[in-house]
Each structure stands twice: as structure tokens, then as C-alpha cells.
Length: 112
Image 1 (cartoon, one colour):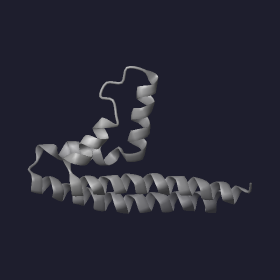
Image 2 (cartoon, helix red, strand yellow; image 1 turned 180 degrees about the horizontal axis):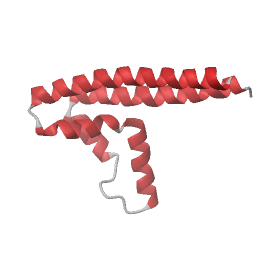
Image 3 (cartoon, rainbow, N blue to C red; image 1 turned 30 degrees about the vertical axis):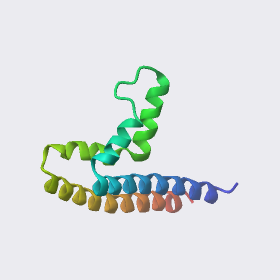
Image 4 (cartoon, rainbow, N blue to C red; image 1 turned 60 degrees about the vertical axis):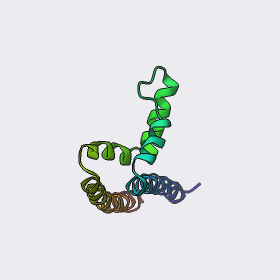
């Protein structure tokens, strides 16, 4: 397998993770506490063993940033919370694109 194909696979995985984070954060904006409950059902509050910790890490890597910030915004009223989440999504979307492009540039320009 050529080096370019390996880099394409790595970029695909990074793009998948960034888009999954963004998509779940968007569903949290639209559906609110229902999606937050879904995330909490999929994780362990106080993991007791290694398997539970692995589940928490995987859930955090795949869809964890949206629930993290939504929990931070819970102390505000509904309208302000949704507005802050929308601002967070805009910033997150721009940063995700920038991070992806920087990694793509680093992989293909500097290494190849």
C-alpha cells in the first residue's frame, strides 16, 4: 500500500470523527436534553473497571464534545443556552475545517 493511500485513510478517519462530533452537537442543539440523556445512557458515570473506562473514552472521542459543552450551558435559560450552542457549533465547524485542512497540508506537503 502506498504512502498516499495510508494518508487518505488517516484523513478519512479524522474527517469522520470531526463530522460525527459536529453532527451529534447539532442534534443536541435541536433535541436538547433528549440527546444528552442518550449520551449519558451510553456512558458510565463512575467507571469501575477497564471495560467501562474504554467505553467512556470511545464515546467521548466519537460524540463527546457536544454533550460536554451543553452541560456547561445548562445553568443558563433555554433561549440563551440554544444561542450559545449555536455559536459553539459555528466555531466548532470552522475549527474542524481548519484542523482538517492543516492536517491534510501537513501530511501531503511536508511528508510527501
